[in-house]
Length: 107
Image (cartoon, rainbow, N blue to C red; front, side, top):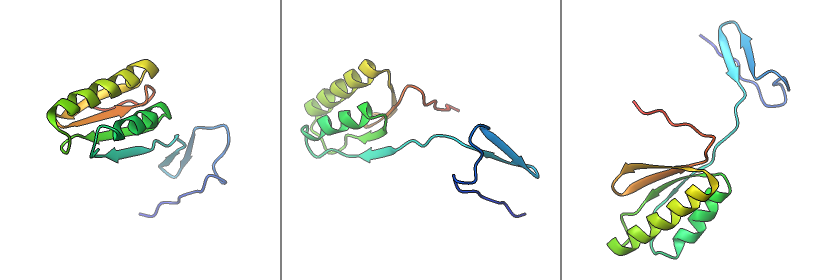
């Protein structure tokens, strides 16, 4: 089976969906997902800026001392709450922050 892919130049402007011989091409916006492991608490401010820019953030706090982990999580939770982003704990050390319009699927 062969699939045909189109560049954005060939995608129709108005229709969100194009059907071609059983193949569906959806025009969807992109999400930048940044993966970060901060070495110090000072790095967290720039990560808050990523969230405010509408980027996704997958944050691993393995390298921070325990009191700084709580401070980092509190700061980023405040940023996420302020702009309506979502915060999802992936594991005790890993948290994901996504823009409010992005949905995640939990199975």
